[in-house]
Length: 205
Image (cartoon, rainbow, N blue to C red; front, side):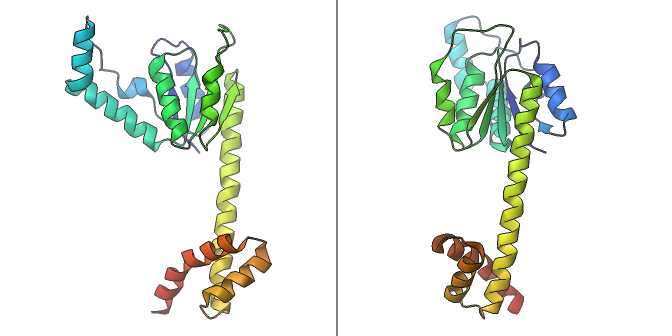
């Protein structure tokens, strides 16, 4: 299960169906429409807009809800067509190291946009899809890769603890053994040993 922030427009006609599809596929999905259903802009001029953006408590509360969800999510799905806010959210998520999945709109192809490549700058990467099925496949791939990483981390952690005990809590000796057993480089092996050192010490007390 992945924690997902779908970024889109209030006017996007497929947004609701995509949110439902992600939830049906087992993901935990933040729906900004549900969270901010009562929020409406009341400004009619640019000055009113600026005043509300800077100081209106309802605007601030809506922003904080969405910002907290952006921090919470693991993947952002940008569902086109959408506007400036959704694209700012996508860039924020990318900068935070989260995977961004861009679901293009095959029914309304637009002028190609070069700067979507900026979303590849983040460590989470970017995937481009053109359908709900492709979007779900990209999310499953993310889940699968994360599960493999987590399993590897758990195995290295367990092995590090055992090696440290065999080495009589000597970090240098344990690091050398771990390198030989796993093929990790010296720095990675030492970091793995260092992580389990406090646990071993606490168990001995």
